[in-house]
Amino acid sequence: MNLENRQILLRRRPDGLVSPDDTEMVTTPAPVPADGEALLRTTYVGIDAAARTWLDGEPGYLPPLELGEVVRVAGIGEVVESRCDAYKVGDLVTTLTGLQDYAIIRDDLFSTPVVGYTDPLAVMSIYGPTGATAYFGMTGVGKPQPGETVVVSAAAGATGSVAGQIAKIAGARVVGIAGGPEKCRVVVEEFGFDACVDYKAADFPAALKKACPGGINVYFDNVGGDILNAVLGNLAHRARVVMCGIITTYLNGDHPGPSNYVNLLSTASTMQGFIALEEWARFDEAFAALSGWEQQGLLVHRETVYDGLESSIDALNGLFTGANIGKMLVKISEPGS
Image 1 (cartoon, helix red, strand yellow):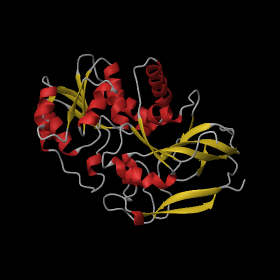
Image 2: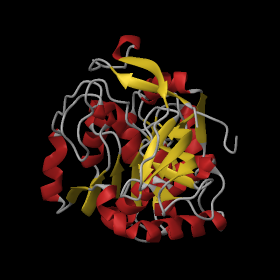
Image 3: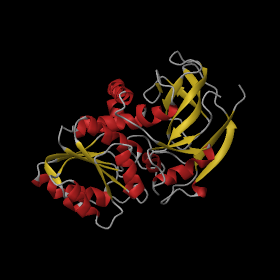
Image 4: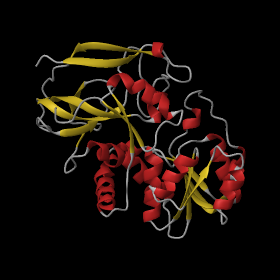
């Protein structure tokens, strides 16, 4: 097979939003799979806030991205050539594709065959890492109970929208936090939250307190910063704060400590982070639950889709300017083509 592989490489560490000179698109021959490998043609990639942190070269739960490497993102694609018993041609697989047309995959932790699902948008929104992250964080750390008040930041985003719906399924009253009236409308009318507070409004702290008159039992945090601080000022007794992300700090690297952290002590509350990949052995459990809820109409998803590999950096920057509702995706190629 003589295939060309477009790739977006990291050329310079970004300062703030990713600028045109920070990356470069190159075209090389597609890699040839060795024994135990398969070649995947990327159809969609998911753009997550973590992808921006990987560009900084700082250590994390995955190795830092080096200059000259393909920009790291998770994606979904179709196997076009295989020398691996785990995959056959035509299989749908999610993996860390990177921003490129073709990727080599192996039978390892990062590559998961998709069985029983044909809609790549649903897979990326619910059945892939996004849905699993929401599931493990909300059910494993947040543990919402019927009648409790659960607050979710970035509620119009990919992970937040799913996390909030999981809390609703558990019987909780769910309040979202989102930016602007339209996103708040979507959170309530489409994702089924009980209420949504606009963090861009001048009266945000007061509005949050009004929306949670009995205090906040569970907070699923995707943003950190001032919003986290406002929530910590409204905790109920023995609240659980789930640390999923801190997108407000990803562009500048600043991590100011919340002044209201003392309320964790006075309310006997907990704040805990988690890494979804550490729950790999339970992914089948997560997918089974998420699938069942979607089939019952209890879980809905929405995507914002950019078209073409060349639009990927615009999509990444769009995460930080509020361009998306639901999962941010980039369509790299036509499925089944």
